[in-house]
Image (cartoon, rainbow, N blue to C red; front, side, top):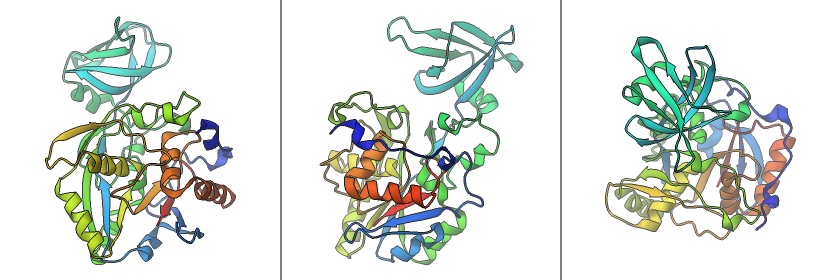
Length: 334
C-alpha cells in the first residue's frame, strides 16, 4: 500500500485547539460496517447502540505533564518534551534547535541538556528525581498542530476522567469525551466495563517516512492487561454481546495481548502496526477521534472499517464540519 492513499485535505478551521464544552457534548459520527450507513448525532447518544450484553474497554493511562520550558542563566529559553526515561532521572527529549547547556531553576533544581555521543539523541538529566521536576514545572504535552502553548486548562481537558496509571506522553483522546455522569450511565444500563493500560509514547504519533506502508516500523510502547480480560471477552461474545474498544491505543493493547496469549499480569512491550489485512481477534466496535493524514492511527481505523468506507466517513465528517484531531469530535464504528 502506498502512503499517499491515506492523504486528505482538511480545512484548518476544523482542527480544534480546544475541546467542546462541557465535556461529553461532542458530535458523534456513527458508521455501521454491515449496512455502511453513516449518520451524525451527539456523543450522549452512544448508548443507543449498545445493550447490557456488551462490554466497554478503556485505557486508564494517565498523561504525565512532560512539556517543559527551561531557562538558562542568560535568560535563554529551551522548550523540551520528555519522551522516554532512559535511566533514572535521565530522559530522551524532543526539542528544536538545541545546544548543550545547563539550566538553573528555583529551589536548587538544575538540569543539563546534552547530545548522546552514541545514539545522537538529545537528552536531559536532572539533579533530583525527575518527577519532582515535572510536577513543579511540567505542562501537558498537547500536540504541536494545536499551534499554541499548553496552559492550565489542558491539565483537565487533556486527561480522561478515569486516568489512573501515570506514564503517557499523550492522551488516549477517544476517552476524553466521557464524563463521570456518562460513566454512571454505563453502570445504570448494566453495560460491563474493563480497563487496561497502554502508556502512549512517540510510537503512536511519529510520522511514516516510507512510501510503502508495510515497511513502517513502530516504536515500542508498554502495556498491561488483566489476563482475565480475554475470558471476559469470550463470555460476552458467547452471550451475543460485543466488545467496544475506546480508542486506538486500547485496541492496540487488546489485540497485542490477544497475540501474546500469556496468562500473567506482567508489563509487555508492543510494536504492533495494525494495517490492511490485520485479523482482529478481540474487537467488535471502536470509538475513536478523527486522525491526521498519512498517520498510523488513520491506517488502523481504515484497516478496521475498510478503506473505502473509512474514506467516505472522513469526507462526510469534513462536509458536516466535524472537529478533528485530539480535541475534536468522535466516530463510532459498530
